[in-house]
Length: 378
Image (cartoon, rainbow, N blue to C red):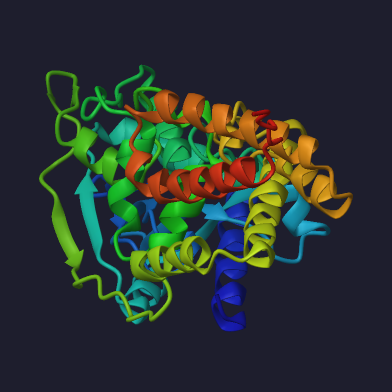
């Protein structure tokens, strides 16, 4: 986001906060339209899943504003550690609709609109709730990947306004969160691999919560309120073909080539480098599992593959302890076997299978090379 865009966001946020503070409420006209905007995916990591916002349009009062619950401050002290910890604060901002739509036009990302079929009194109430949220700081929230994000915040404030849990998940509730996420990583291989191995048990649960923009869009098509559809038919504001730039490295071919290189070179230095990477990754998983409050990162059974005890092999290698290498290699082979049977029905089995095979081959070779020879007496 450039400085100019940021200044405009701050201006409109302050404007609507000030208007609410001084007048307590802007009286909307009867022809006010309130809608949910679903924004398409992009190629940056933060835009892979799309975005959700609320638009309020009143031509009589010259109001056309978009409320966006997905803002955060890159200048937050210890930004990276706060993000990992899971206590990074997100907040809502107000954009003018032209500025909002121009940004997506520039980024070549699609935007779809679903107007809400709610009485005028509820439109006014939603508008008031949004402005109160901005002015009071209620819009600040601790980001959680599944449980608290720009989409879930929109669902919450609409449900709060209508007084019932009108918007519920009504599609794809029989598949896991991990499976729901996978199509968003098409042509982003290493993002897909990274997400697969850092997420633990929580994302293997059935996807019963609305947490992605296009899930909300699908659910709104089927939700009823006061005996009629809550949202009108989907309207296309902008539509672009999502073009993924060519990457010579971000694809499964480099992944397979690297692992084949590790296997077929048969050099101890390469083995040790590979095992070091696997072990350090496992230690990182242990760290974030205990340190982070992101529930998605807890109970990460992928640690059976990225096993921190592999560092012990390095120690035993440098101390020339063949018995230690042999026993630890057998332990990790057993861990791989348990891991394989644990994920045999999981969505990321195919992704990590080459790593299982590579680790298995290396560990078997190390076990054979360091097995104590039994002398044969003739």
